Length: 257
Image 1 (tube, rainbow, N blue to C red):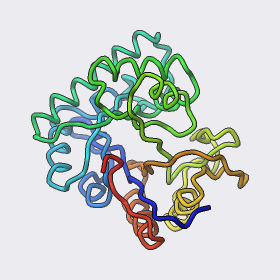
Image 2: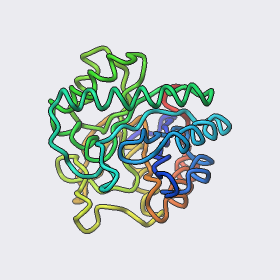
Image 3: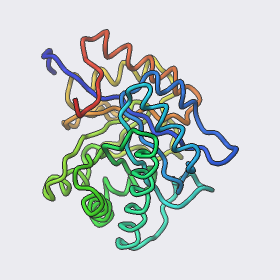
Image 4: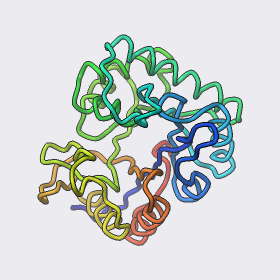
């Protein structure tokens, strides 16, 4: 545990609607977070939603990044699809390009990349997938920061490749003894209670470690905290987490500042 001054980023995945369908309250979330990960059209999102969200983030002073995932609108990018490493590399590069184009169009260029859903989980546990995502980022724009799941292959590899990284934990997800996310099919995998989520986040940031479902602590850098925007209580959780961090003397700001 530490009592020294700390700062941490608060991020959320957004622009995940499609056409006439909306997912989450992006307008409200953007009033709370310091980073936004924008869906690039594969698991959610489309040019209209992307451009609108980039512009709104610019107005709110919220940093933006690409949020590439598997091409899986039906499953919201949360199903593993058996692409080859080369195919993953190219589908990630494609989505980063889309995010760069529309963020530039909106006058608010992206500064980071965070893999979504099943693809993101694989970057933590599968070295080949992690390398494919990192190669795509480095090939398209090596100045982009890799926002990575803590304790995974992607951060180690990205650092070895000379890419900048920021390590992320989740406010609203439970962790296994190995430091992986509890599968969403399991009871208690998603934390819906805002007060519980906020208290847990403060404990983890202060400890510099992940708290598992059994109370075990796994040390890790914590640069950013994610609150998923598609959960019913997302806005309440995000606001409660931010309020709790600031009440504990922890500054909430983008990881690039």
